[in-house]
Image (cartoon, rainbow, N blue to C red):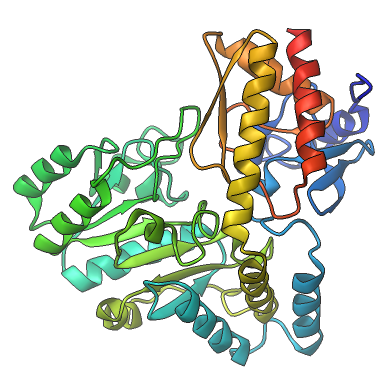
Length: 406
């Protein structure tokens, strides 16, 4: 493969213009991905690829931070969304497609006896906490250190701009894979704790991802049941990438509530909270809604997405691809004199160069991006069912070129 690097002059110019009318130019989590040498705006996307406004093509290993699980512009998903849109999308009544989608989730997800819908993963996690409080009559939330469950004030913590101390006053933080710390908290405050919320495995930013230790989830589940604490799994990021029936199935436990988002509709704005029959009455009582919560087109897209995921055996397919990609990149790094650590689950790999400083790691990422592989230096990555063997070869060749520049 020819060793060429991209120019992003149009992106740089548009970012300058954007800053005049948008605080920071690009806001939210996308702003943290901005690098001097990298793209800022896309022009089009298809399959496992996108093109920036300078018409540079990238193999996308972020998949829009997870939603594009079947690849961009999946024909079955887009046909379903467009067909529903031609009949109506956001209307003064709910569409029957909402019932169809809920039925599909109840059939597909092992824990699910019912489903409610929102737009973002944070909708699902906030609703889950409210349901847990209603079900238990208790207030406090236990979460994992550096666990991320959306941008609601209770989640962000008082060190973030715009957040005050009282916003997270009811949140208790413990370390991942530490059953003893949870036992201690329960021993002291079980009559105040409504819920324990965590991702199925630990995937914080800027740190190696860590799987649950043997027996961890069984221990957490037992403690929750003994103390009337609702167990919430935030499967927004990992959902449908580990096991199509829920990531908890892979780890052998049953939560009370599961939060889905990102990949559920292959890029169309939708999230879902599913739960057991024991949670149904509390879920019915809680008021949580939004203007676009009943939009029918994303729900039709979600039904098509779930169907395609099952047809493709998507979780196993992405796991296989991710394993082969990780093996290839680790080998390329070793041959280049570096040690690459690939952690987390294969469908969501987190990469870190070992025994080098952070600047060197980010420089390697930047050099990959400049040659056409879109990656981030501080976040787990995502693969899709559209990524191919040819992509592994191209990514590995570009990674080798990037190592050579170091």
